[in-house]
Length: 255
Image 1: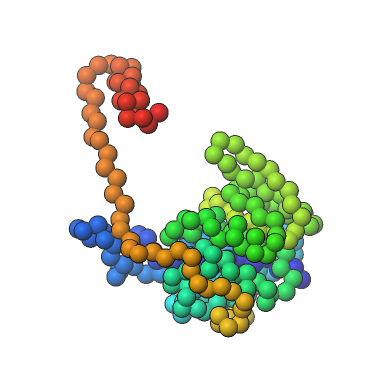
Image 2: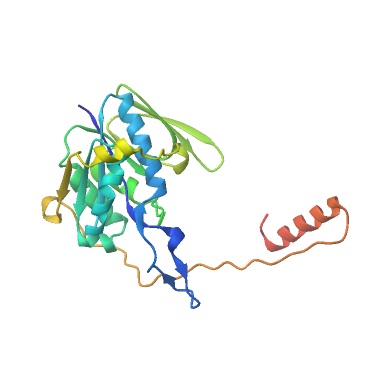
């Protein structure tokens, strides 16, 4: 039976990250979760599997903490899950993550499609899907807003800066979907209970062929603060105020 593998990431809940007075970040109250973007990606993979009468496999690369993500992922319609348990994941860059995922994918039979999110919600570096496609020597389509499969043909609508592009490719391939591809429904109680009975395969770094040495390391993390000018235009008619605002934007180089 053909398999669709969906890659997801276990990340800190950005809503619970606090900013200290010195502009450093306080992660002490932040819990981990499956990225909101990845929840939509999981739903896209489940729908794609239904179209080809296949099965869906979740795949994540993380530390021991990532084990907590598996039941949540399985409750969202996945049939089974693979977890690469590696301490190296805590400092992994896009090259390391792609290498680890490619190594795990070589252990999974009959993979016809790999679905990733365009970018992780914590970094949004957009590195992993194209790197993964290159390692597997598969066609790769990014910025996917719509996805359709008929037989061995995948049709994707890419959302570009000022246009839409329709692309057709023969499976197998890698696609990177945008968060707006669909909404992710909340799992029901029955799905949550069933998730605990689904198969899970744990892989160690020794089980896969992967380069886990990062090419990029983060030396520090600080908050990004953006200062805005508080422009108030009180005088004149509505047309005159709009004209003054546009003139200000031109002076600032914003338009």
